[in-house]
Image (cartoon, rainbow, N blue to C red):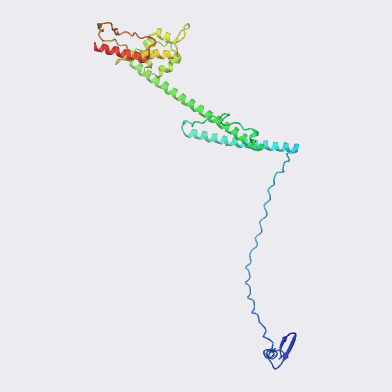
Length: 322
């Protein structure tokens, strides 16, 4: 019942029934009108929190692609060739800078560390690293890159070969300096043990320059030099004259080896270069036809050093038994 009008009303099938004595429930019961279905109120949805607006990132500018070159036209072919040339020049400049950086690093390492033998590097030749040719590549661009790399390898091989030669030259110079110092020390010791060296040695003694390394490397090189100085005929025969050629270096070394063996057999204590007279008694002539061994050197010029030493040892043993 509406408290403002005092009536209760029920509406069904477009017919409204009002009564001031009955309630709406009673009217529905008298007329058979079902109770209206009252749906519960929908729950209130929670308010969504406010999300600050973030400005959308601006789209990146698309990379500008270089205009395509139509190689079918004359201008297109010229532009394509020029582009390949520019790329080749840029590649070569980059390779050159890398090579210069490597050379600078190598120079610093040489300054910080003593030289060591470089690793053997196989030489680059046409068979192991042939120069690229355009027919071996699908595109001219691939050929240009391969050509630039090949030229860089050739420059590196040249630099390594120069480094190897410089190291070998340095080692040879150091070895020669050590040899010269050893000779000076050896000569000084012999001079100190031979007081009359200056009177006996003649500076004009002819010596073949091809056998000088042999003399300076021998332990008894100073004694050999003094012996040649005291026997100018022999020195002249070895070194040659204006009218006679010198002996072959091998033959000269063979003669010097014989002299060295004689000096070693003749000296056993006195100052080097001082000849010793043999104190052995003359050998007794043996009965029979066997040859007599004498103290004189009966060897020939063709006798080897081993044969000469064996003959000298046999003579000494024979003299000792007498």
